[in-house]
Image (cartoon, rainbow, N blue to C red):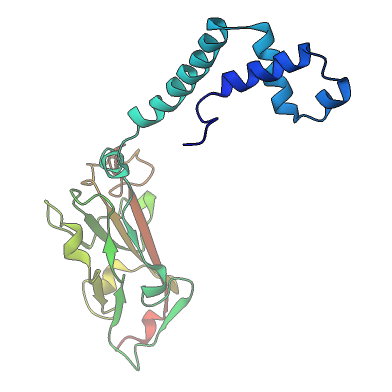
Length: 228
């Protein structure tokens, strides 16, 4: 250890005494600004008072740092308390929902709709779903297909959901309206669907307030007059 190590206050005292012994103002001005501030502080608060000030500064720093260490929690424990919505990969949906699917009864019989992988950030959630044809709130449409009452674990939907539709066959033919473009709709939720009334904004698609859902809609152009 060097001879001057650990005796900072002694050096400051020595420097202050040198000033009293006739050091010129130019010599004093050559000293670093921080050094001059320390000397002034030492002259104002000599002895034990100066040491008490340094102790107070150290204690203040400790009190500022400790709370950050005490209140930090793992991110995983916070996520478990928040219900996050289920999700899917839009690029893996087939056919793509950004287009109108053309169906020609004279050349094909069925259309297959696939969601791609579906999952949920909350591993303890169960997923529920319902398929609809030409859904309209005013007609109080019932789902044409739905999940089991207990739903499914997210891991069970890694391959997603698939639905084959045969537009010219019953009961699909009767369920579709007479318009040229039809809607194939899927709703997936992380809570069981609630019983609906005619006054609900979207009958048979409502979930509890603490639930989340997403909706997929495919548009299909289909001329029913071409059915055999």
